[in-house]
Image 1 (cartoon, rainbow over the protein chains, first blue to last red):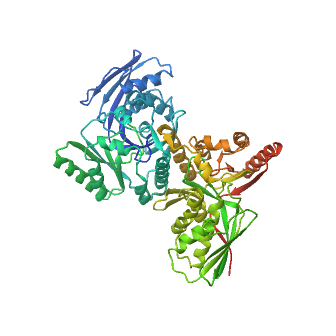
Image 2 (cartoon, chains in turn red, blue; image 1 turned 90 degrees about the vertical axis):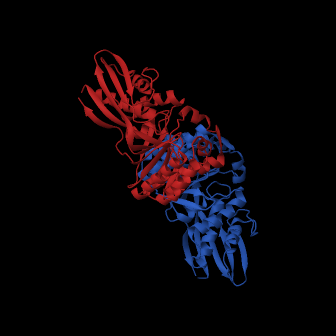
Image 3 (cartoon, rainbow over the protein chains, first blue to last red; image 1 turned 45 degrees about the horizontal axis):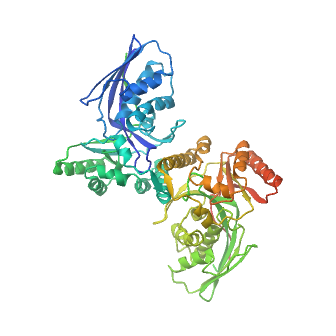
Length: 309
Length: 309
């Protein structure tokens, strides 16, 4: 195999109750990444999609992740990475993760799957570290493993793939502003009251139980964030109103996707999902706020191979 | 039915990663509680078992829980509560919870099960509040529901019954000192660093996943407490050494039971359980520390009716 094209999807993290540890892989929205072997060693990156992204391999997350990977193996050729960005940077649905994870996944295919999934998560995290200032795998894990995942540890990578209840789907609405993950992390308080920790943990535990049992009522009571959301919500236009609209139209739960500004709602039927998306869209349109909105099933497979040569 | 005798078992809470929310019901050790209708209204308590417990209904947890219950129903008779304490107070395996939950469970039987399980948890919590200074249901929930439970909320009681993997059992060793829950709660830090909260939550989530999947390796990596244990361990004689012994002899995990001084180990086979118990016992004997130790399966039923008349 000399070249490969993959679809590397977006992802929602935190899911309100699992700050920095929960993540969910989306079907819709994602980067298309083509990686080809080159005869000369080294990495070349080109990006398109209309976003002003650097092609410097030491500043582009795909280049950073790829270099972390290639440090651990001797290869006699190089790689040309062509990224067609389908996710707007700073949108809160894992734009950087899609590029870094998609790239290392694709290169690994060209290396005859030399590395395992946990290795790919580790390499991708170098890209995440570069853009956010800290190691976290909550975006890269679900797009590499598919479905919903829980990152138990990033020191020695340990990730649990959780079940996705049948019919669960998400509605994503992104008001058209950019929030840098590194900025959004700054508003998170450094310390949490023990009582808040207890409440947040109880909700996380209940949410995980609901994934195994498919108890959507319990899920609805559990997807709550009293620790991070109150501060981050202030950065997102009309967040409280969108929350209210989403609940009124039958969502299971609603919260900030990753570090925002995207807002996710959970639903277990397409009729509600459509009503939720339409109602939020109407609201933003009335106020003249530009936005992007879509409905997505849970992507159980993760990164997909589109073509190989 | 004019009188009833129940066995109200001990319980382990926190299970390291679930401070104030996780609880597990024991088969062994428990209070025997007899409740009989009396013609005159009001409550009378008598206790035996060798512990110096008050029979004042406003100071004994069973009386406090029973009164909370009887406030919500008109009854023309009274109740005599005879408690044969089988759990040493201040031992960390839910002594007060066994008395309060067992008592309201028994009275409810005499009231033709007028109240539901969540009501019984609510009434029992009044006893817990009295002894510990705060509302928590992590001991009373698993002995009322049986098995392993997660308390999502104590404001409006919300409890999730979790599965117990086949073969899971516990080894309990209690060095013979008393730690009052209220004292043990004082050593818990009031604020937690966000990074610690993330780690602790990740472990809790992974533990809950392991209960559903029976993945004992994941359970072993998850039953860790970096928030409360470091401070509470100082109150328990030889805690670190007991931990080491338990691990060396094949436990899945080891931690402080409730607020201590009891130490629990998890195991999935009786041979390991026996080795763990014997080795810890030997260690305490060598040092001349008196202790109580036993092995228990998970009690999936909770409080048991022994006799009715």
